[in-house]
Image (cartoon, rainbow over all chains, first blue to last red; front, side):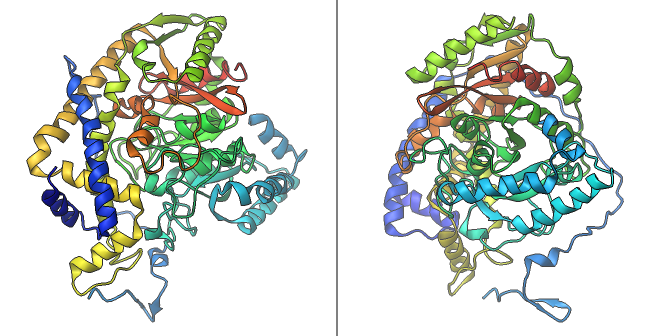
Length: 86
Length: 466
């Protein structure tokens, strides 16, 4: 992988990295790729998919009885307080 | 394990007396071992008192009555933190319980706490946790294995009777092997994944740890089976009935050189002893041409990285989790993820993002998926000749803390023999088998799809034979 392309992938992955981390990961990722290359040496003549049925349920709503607002500790009256997005 | 439940129900040993014994162990060993992220000692005491009352009034019931349970911190327990050992979710509290937990609690189990693990289950040593590494109870300078490190250590050190872990590439069996306990990875789609934070959805399963095979059968009896909240789970099995009736005489067990390449000497020697013990209990050993795992195991990483990167997209710090800073949306998200995730998680997200890009889709991920179907066909053919397959669980003994932490390729080699079960979906169990010095050694048995009950029953005959 070229360095420039690596920077592009990091941007798409939405992770802010320090220069030190970039150096480290860039090097390690090359090593991991040579590991992944090993699978080029294997092949299997046949393929098999474990049969799975697709179960469907009736379209009836089921109430969620727990309190999801536990995730949002700050409350104002009837409202949940969340941080501003920007 | 069922003997202990009997004592607890009869009042011979009250649930709160038993719990206090466990708490004493925790007080003694936890400061060094770091197996727990959250403990709920007071909550557990209250629950034990309620169970005491049931004993006194002769109403004690439930298959796991009074047993102390520890739960990996990527499995939801209502009202407790669910951190996945990550700074990203350091203060996240779960509003509901996983189906597996709910079922065990309904049968009388007492949740004592949430266990330490590799961050988002990414690791094979228990060292990548934001809350610090877990130590091996048999040698505190060595790793306990991972990623379900704390769950294995809790059982191995007597800090819980049973525990739950998750297994995507070996995360139950690996630490079970390194700490000398039973650890079971069920068939994919036998236990509901509702309430499990996913690593790679096509591979993840929830499974139990126990000091004995009986505890595995007992907890699986309760956890396995259909759950409307995970539509994939449609089948059920009678673990206890099979456990009590099983006879290993004439059972065919397959093994092959393909499982042994890369296995280090002390482990290889113990494996040979294991084959002898299998022979001595009446099993018929069959040498087979098995997939060459040294070449096959990287396939696991090829499949897992893209699924993991996709699963991790939800952590952006906007609605919950660590909050980022910045002047635009991109910066706020990238900052939260940069600060919130540890090294191994970042590495895996970057690799997964890369492998799922259109430019590489054909050469990597698509080929990986095709090879996985091929591997399933190979394994299906093997199971036409034998009932079980066997190999060591991990190719080497527990290593020193820090030794492999920043060498991912070396770290990943720990999964070489466990990923086969995840890639194909079959059940697999770690059987503790002897020691090398102080260090435990573990052997793996794998079974056919949905013959989990027979596999656990077989493991019982190998208990204490190391």
